[in-house]
Image 1 (cartoon, rainbow, N blue to C red):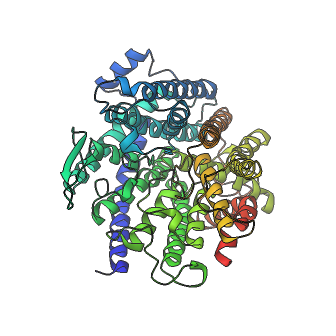
Image 2 (image 1 turned 90 degrees about the vertical axis):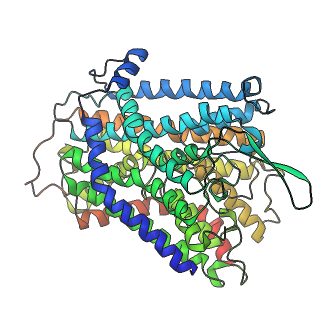
Length: 563
């Protein structure tokens, strides 16, 4: 079977299953977050943590709950990594260094899963299960909760400022949505040959007679939630390129499906909750257009042997697995950078200058195609509100979003939101480059203006884009184990997660205080659904990222592609 045929089959399988699950899963999630009934397990959890599930929270209370939960999670995960060598089943592994523990704790709690260590030789299975896998569920649950809080702010008609209860949203999203779907995905992974074992390693004899061992563990279950929750942290250094994690083209297609499933279905959830399904379809159309366009570009660039591909004939498969080919690798790479997943089944550093630049651009768009679990939806909703404001100014219509007026406070919060990620990316990259904070970190380094130096700049830009967007993937040529990178990238991950969440909740609070007016028949109000508004939203998304990052892209991937 040719690479093109195999890739098209994987793509068709993913799209068909997404289409089949879009309505039932989206509506199920809407019912989950709107339900007034709690299960026995949920009521038990609420009693343990002292929460009244019927009490609502304003954006400040919701935000403080998120901040408190995040702080405690980081501290607990940090301590677990430091003391893992003194706990049972350590398999001879010691505690991690303070800098690595700091970076990793922030990474997994913020849904980034940036890994500056070798998992199979550094992390114990107990830490994997009790620390990292737990945070894969909870960090995804937090993102979904914040998205639902913003939806409630948009649809709120009482004007009381309440946007739900964080603890209820977190528990329901984890137990009712993430856990059951992850179990199904993990079972399929095991049937396809992924590793799920209580043994720490398997010993074997190589062809030359020497003995060796390969790490084992309950990894298929962690693979499932790493993909479903758009986390991305692997149990092997090779991540989803490892045959024990992603053994077949079937699991590769299933991985892409798991990555896209909830972010795509959340657009249906949004439309259902606000009572206008066209709103969700408009957002889905924008997401699909960007995702499809980026897939076509990266796939094309990686299939070329001349021009913008900037590679010699015969080297197209460098850094890619034969069992996935160019098509399967491009499909996975575009999906993982278009969301906050960051998992990799190929080496992004080995992509062509244009192909690798496309993956970087996917993150710099703000990861809205379709974005991470929860984060993609609320990021695109913020851009939708900005689009309403800009579009209203262009055509002289009132800036309203589903009956809520977009005034000075609302647009200020929205503008601050879209400035956070660019500030972190550009400041982090600039400071790193100017201060020369990369001794022995770049495998691609050389005289200023050389191809090697340009690619080294792309590696730094990619690292801070990945950290600030809570993506977690990396160009393989950057060694990020120095104290500078451990700390600076850790801070970028934390600020890139917390500040946008606080701003989104503040926006939700402002909208929840307004009583909506019936503007469906008001010709002075700009429609927020349909092809025209979708095109305007798409243009705004591309324009904001283009004006912000074109100079940096011109210094890195664009210069390299044309060199």
